[in-house]
Length: 127
Image 1 (cartoon, one colour):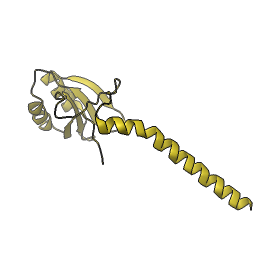
Image 2 (image 1 turned 135 degrees about the vertical axis):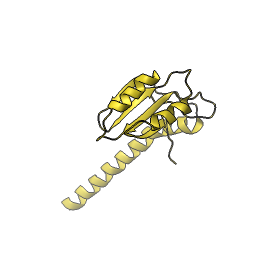
Image 3 (image 1 turned 120 degrees about the vertical axis):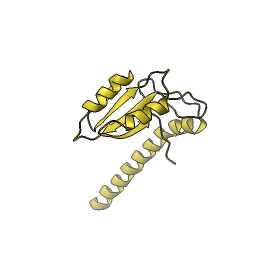
Image 4 (image 1 turned 90 degrees about the vertical axis):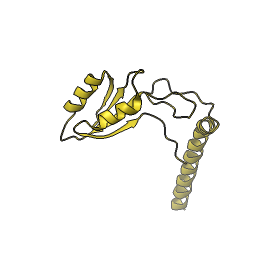
């Protein structure tokens, strides 16, 4: 009898957690699906919609063996602003000058020794 009681309490707890998590996500999901949500003020990520302006923030990953010195030199040479150095993985966030062509900056950073990938900052929505 005790075993059935424990099992039923466990199932009820899991059901409660699932319902709480689902109800907490619904308003966010509605904002995302309708496109009328506001952006996060503290985040450097920008919304990538066709009507929105081009994001001038790049996320650049580099090879840990090569290090970030060549990349930091290139950032300084191009007149970009270093926004953030990621501690968990080998990468940096860089703000490209508004007057500079973002596609040219991406191509230039890809040529730097040790750079693995260069991506525009944005939000991806998974279905």
